[in-house]
Amino acid sequence: MGEADPHAATRRLIAVTLDSASIGRSNSDVEHERAIAIYDLIEDNSFAPLGDPQPGPYCLAIALIEGRLRLDVTREDGAPVVQHYLSLSPLRRVVRDYFLVCESYYSAIRTASPSQIEAIDMGRRGLHNEGSELLRERLKDKVTLDFGTARRLFTLVCALHWKG
Image (spheres, one colour):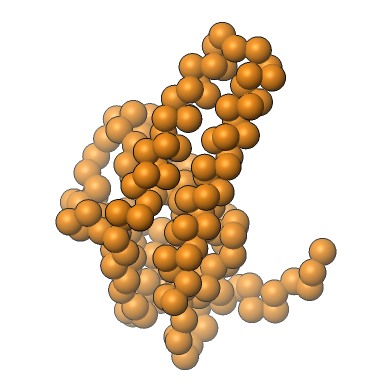
């Protein structure tokens, strides 16, 4: 285990909100998945906009605007830090494949053998890791975040696309 980050308290998100106008309301299952994804992200993350001269912690507001992800980073008091727009095109394939594997996984839970379920779950985790790395790569010039934070952010991006 490495040394703990002495700046962990300032290199983190303390709030994440979704823009309901661009993302829209969904059924209760989808809302629940989004709430869990936000909770997990806030609970454990490492997040710092590059080039910010002041320490955090930060608040993140996420919106979907014309097929792009808008990440609005502010301070605790609402003062703006930075706004990034991210094309979702590079993530579309992996998100689609992830949903397909998730459907197979949920269907397999009812009927498949433990070894079949485990194989599907390994594929699901592999796609989740691929999406997380892709998201991290797309953000590398904008935000410093660890792999765990990228995973939780990818989960949230998927939750934004999930129709239930």
